[in-house]
Length: 174
Image (cartoon, rainbow, N blue to C red; front, side, top):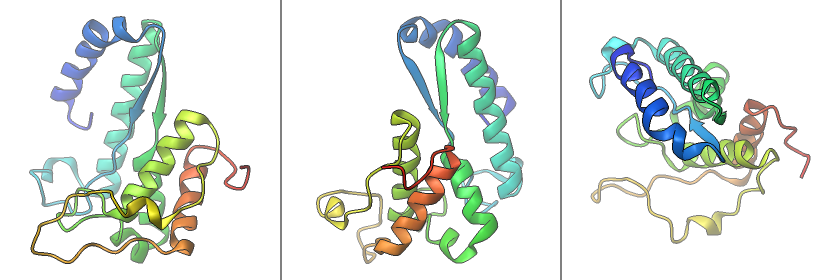
């Protein structure tokens, strides 16, 4: 959604292909986070982190209004806005949100994104973090590298709170 040409094609596909299938549903559009660095994955044209985030947010807003214009309910899961909040307030934690490639999420970013999606879907705070959830999960990482660290309980709760606030939900209202 951050590039005009591909966004226009997506708007057409939303109207012509997806909207008829979604009439009785609520579409959840996930605002992915901008890449951590500006010079990776051919993203130089998308600007710095804030500019890229703005473009993603604007593109998702267009997608949402496109679906709503044809009678489909839609919500945006503001994962990218939660990442941006951390980018602006806690650089140390922000750098933990990405995997080794600087555009896929690490376990920290995955937890944050999962919390945002949970809040968006259910309109309530997610359960508190349980490290056991990771015991059988898999995530992208080169086989020759040590596993990326998991957030500790305090970090996980901080991320959960940021996710809730990004969705306009009180974190402690379980």
